[in-house]
Image 1 (cartoon, rainbow over the protein chains, first blue to last red):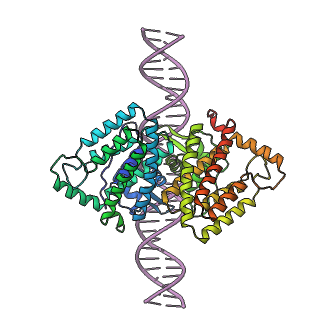
Image 2: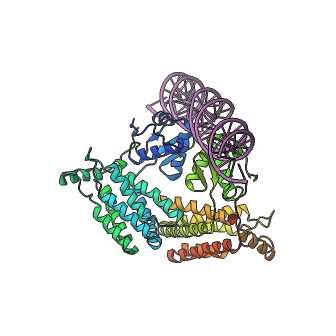
Image 3: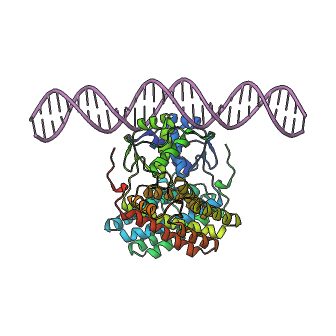
Length: 248
Length: 248
DNA sequence: GTTGTCTATAAAATCGATTATATGTTAGTT
DNA sequence: AACTAACATATAATCGATTTTATAGACAAC
């Protein structure tokens, strides 16, 4: 069976449900639980070290969001992935993300600008590859990457756009993580560059940042669209883990 | 306390969680549980006649979708409503709905057309007002109304559009149900028309249907946008229940 | 050999009881 | 009177056990 990255790790004030939710989601997005795989609550209970109630609540939430499929009387399954689903996810994500930046650019104040610049700086200063394991992306980079993109849309006022957008961002991250294309790309990238170089997307991010600062929403949207479709192309470039049949 | 419309009513094959989910959602959308209201699990347990587990699972799902707010260690609350939220909901809903019809028009076959026509016919043949209580909308009309709009987008292939769109449709129904404007409108409508007349939106629906059948997506989008904003105007026309402070 | 039914087993769903956390109240201090 | 601390109460969150439902395997009938 797949080895879950996280067992018990409860922060203060949080509820166990919230913890399991985060851990489960992280493990699904990072591919510990593969698409289509059965999620036997008995096993999960042991792995995450909680009782059924918080576990099932977390699974229910994940099912409502779309990362998990809940079938009555037949338990939970990791949401499957496919090429069509990738295309769909990227398409809707792009649309929503463009709406989000556009609004963000309209509403953003100086603090918003400052936070974007700060987020970009953190991202640009972080090694793309994990120093310990140059075949995988640094978790810190992943965090900062997410935070940078979040900072772009932080001034968007729309409750629903932000909510939907986040779901789709996470789903795209799952595709990235399960993509052989990305893995292969990272290997060759590691060979070409020595150590703590800039990441291969840094130029993209810089351009997007500049467009946002220039309040040029049209340009920002176009750049984001390109940035996103580049990702899709890499994912599609090689057969990917999400295309395999689910194994138990 | 508010009187929940439904107690136990379990269909065969379904899980209790799914039942409570549906009943709770219906009661929230129909205003039995008002926006901002606390949802004490102990009380709900009695009202819906289930134990904590399925109840909390249902609440978790509702929280993930956005109809309920879950605060760690402080339980569940009905999602609040406001004018801004109404505007936002309608705006995003309109965008998604237009994408959905456009795609549906691209992909729809003769069956799709037939189902739309059938759904429209059912809707047009149903009295808008409840014969028993002419101050409220007939539940049958509400069902057929939803089914008609669903039929329009039924040929849309996008998983995410359909999913998000449904959430927003339900949220808009909640606004309609809690709107004094709609209530007032229904009263005057009941006076003007005698009995089983066509509903006030029938012309709108007919136009939208025709545009869809003519495969004119641009026109369909415009009509839908108008149709939706008419609803928003009515809701905003008078002070509404969702604008009141939540009472226990 | 295939199909169908029954049984045994495993898994999911649900319950009632327990524990942990928050909230409200009272008493004590300045 | 205002503030704080300790307690009591109410509510939420969690657990372990029970019940229900699905699934796999054996056996019988055709």
